Each structure stands twice: as C-alpha cells, then as structure tokens.
Length: 579
Image (tube, rainbow, N blue to C red; front, side, top):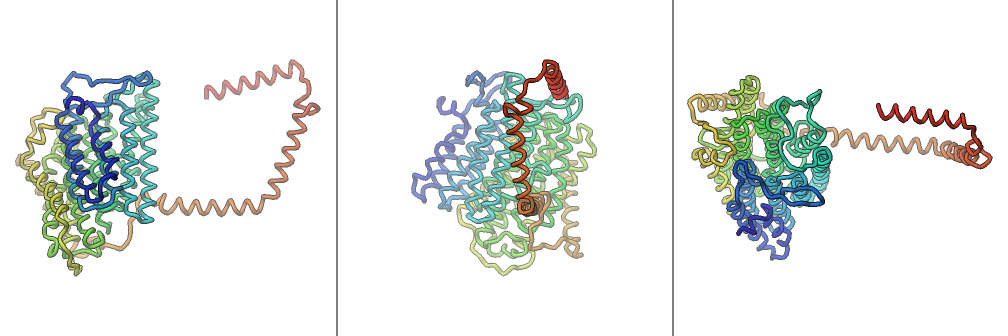
C-alpha cells in the first residue's frame, strides 16, 4: 500500500483510463467506475502532511521537484474530485463510446494530480493534460459546432499552460526554485512600485484563464454546452475548481482578486436570465459561483479560505447535479432550450425532484449545502469590514436564485406544457443524481463533517438567527421578484437565439476582419503586383552593384570614416540598451 500511495494521486485513472479501449464496450463504463473507486480508496489512505512537515522531493536536471503534496488545502479538493469522478462515471454507465470514458478518466486523474502537485513543473504537466484530455469530451458530440468550440477551448487552455510554464521558468531563473507556494505578500498590487513579479503575473494570468475571469470567460459558455450529455458533467467539476485551488495556494490575500470576484458574481446574472439554452444558463451560473470563491481567496483570512474550499467542495456536487438533471432532459427530449421545454414534471418526476434540490443548494437554502459554505465567505467579508463587498455578495446571492434556483426547474419542468411525454431518465442517471442530491442535503445538515476537512480550525456556526433570517429574506425577495416580473410580462422573454457577450469578438468581429483582410490583400496583390516586382528587381540590382568589388561599399574607406561609423553604431546600441 505504501508503494501505491507514493505514486501521484489519480494515477489509476490516468494509466488505467488509457487502456479502457481494450475492454468490450459494455465493460468500459464499469471499468471507468472501478478505476475511479480504486483511485479514491488509495487517496483516502494516502498520508497527509502535518504542520511543519515537508513533502518528499526528487531531483530532475538540477531542479528540485515535489510531485506529491497532500496537505490540509489539497486534500479536500482531492476528495471531492474523486467523488465527482465516481458520480460522473455512474451517470455515464449507459455510454458506449470509448472516447468519453478514456477522456473522462484521464481528465479527472490529471485534475487530482494537479491539485496535489508541490512544484510548478509538475503542476504544468497535469495542467496541460487536463486541457488535452477534456477537449475530447467536447469533440465527442461529433458536430461541426462542437469541433469549432473544442478547437477554441483547446487553444485557450493550452495557452493558459504556456503562461504557467513561462512563469515557472522565470521564477526558476530568478530564485532557483520551482516550489508552488504563495506568490504575493501583504500589500502587493498589480501595478506600481510594489507590484507582483513577472513570474507571478504569468502564473496569475494562467490561473485567471482557467478560472474564467471576466473577459477571459467565454471559453466556458462556448464549450460546455457543446459537449456530450455526460461530458458536460465531467467538465463542470474539474477545470475551474482546479484554478480556484491554485489561486488559494498561490494568491491568498491578494486584494485585487476581491474586485475581480465581485464582478464575476454580478455580470453573469444578466446573461443567465436572458439565455435560452439551459446548459448555457448553468455555465453562466458557474461564473457567478466562482466569483464567490475568488472573493474568498482575495480576502485571504482563515475564515475566507475555509469558505472558499467549502464552497468549491459543495459547488462541485450541486453543479454536477444541475448539469445531470438538465442533461437527463436533453437525453430524453433532444433539447435543452427553455422555449422547447415545460411540463416535464409529469413524465420525469424523479429528475424534477433532484433538480429542485440542486437548485435549492445553489441558491443557498438553509439545510442544504450551499448555505453552509456561501455564508462563510459572506461572513468573512463582514468580519473584515468590507461593506460594499458584503452588499455585492448579498445581491449576487439573490441573483443566483433568479437564474439557477428558479429559472432552470421552472422552464424545464413546469412553465407552459410543451406536450412532450418521455420516459424517466435511465436508472444509472437517477442513481447518480440521487447520490448528488443526498450529498447536498447531508452536507447542509451534517456540516461539521465538512468543516473538519477544511484547512483551518475556525469556530464558525452557520445556523444563527441572523444568517438564516437574512438568507431567507433574500430568497423570498428573489422569488417574489420573479413572480412579479412573470405576471407583469416584464421578465425577459426566452428567445430562440444564442446571446453573445465578449465572445462577439471572435465569433463575429474576427471572422469579418479576416475576410476583409483577405479581400484587401487580394486587391493589393492584383493592383500592385507588377510594380512591386519591378521595384524589388531594381533594389536587387542596386544591392548587387553596391556590394561588388567596384561598388561603393566594396571600396577602401579611410580610418576616420570607419571610426565615425563605429562610434555611431556604438551610440545607437547604447541608446537601445538603456531604452
């Protein structure tokens, strides 16, 4: 057992996943589930670093690497990643596509290995492996739109890895160390005399892309809805939460993240409310929830980091539950568009119940998991006297009730009757959703079990009169606002269209600019080709004459002339150097 636990966590899924294609198609899904369970058991028995202990290192090409570091911060992420892999594998038991099973296992194993990496080079290897493996979950849809979205996703994710590698190289050159630890100190900013180092800048941008920061976020809404029904469940669990872990490890207490997180909690609300595709609604909702975690990382206190880890833990489960329920609807009806759904509670009652539990959890209803985690971050903001941050988080809590707590179950299962009468979701989907729904309730009630997994020992009690009453008031206000807007006809109508935000630049502007540039080049080529060739020919003749023995460059120059030109070139070099 000691040898097996000394290997990087997640290795059974990575190594075993590659060989799943050798099994019969009916056995591949069961094999994937067995690999996830085996990896989870090995991780559970892996030793945890105590306070003051150092992880084992290995030497590679003169650099000290720490391939495995399981401590109080990485362990909760590793545990919930394994839970997500097991639940997602159960959800995919009916799938007979080896690409999805192999990609899902390698992807989950790489995410687990990354969150337990103690150095930047090991982190980079697993970071890129998550990108390369997860894109196949998008491409497995086998549609032109999925292929294009997957290519954009891959370019962006690999670009994030290149930035991470650049930061690692710069740090090694500057410090001689590749240790993955805190990149900032108290009071540092993005710009100015006390700005973070170039290495930290590169690493922060890499984390920002994977965490879907504002203006860097549209790869998420672009790719997740294009993935397969089961692939989206895998995608929702790992990539962005790996980035949250990385931010907590490297940038805890970095004040600019508070502002970034506040923006992340607010801007998705508008787009989620007007979006028609329910999987895109959930993708925007994912941005919103990530904002809470980024705020917690930016605050950086023990309570805030605990809240971030707890919220990431709970979010992986209830967000997977919501994607599973919408995926079950898509699997049975062939659509996830709000305009084409409604009335499904009659034929999919269990899926309806599970979806409502997930909606309640993400909204932060008391006795559900979202309440016991989100309230920690809001309380941390209040304890640090960040009044406006506290207000923004409260507004965002009401906003998530609008788009995920009400909109998803209402338009999918109630609203108008679409007339669709379909079978209930397959048994394995119901089992996976049931496990996730039970976890949402269990974590909300037996919250001390969750709090014991957190990095710091903090005496925090979520079920106080103030917390419960404040949250219930917010939820009631959001529900009343939804009803009032629906009754008055002011609620944004669901339209059969894809709403664009910053992806307008690469979906619309860039193709038009490319086509316009091509036309301009062809016009210039047709107009000036003859003149250009004549000019080029004349320049070549002039150069030939000048550099010949009898040309002016080939002649003997005086010592004074050579000294003048040498001094001139030296002056130019000095100016360029100091500039």
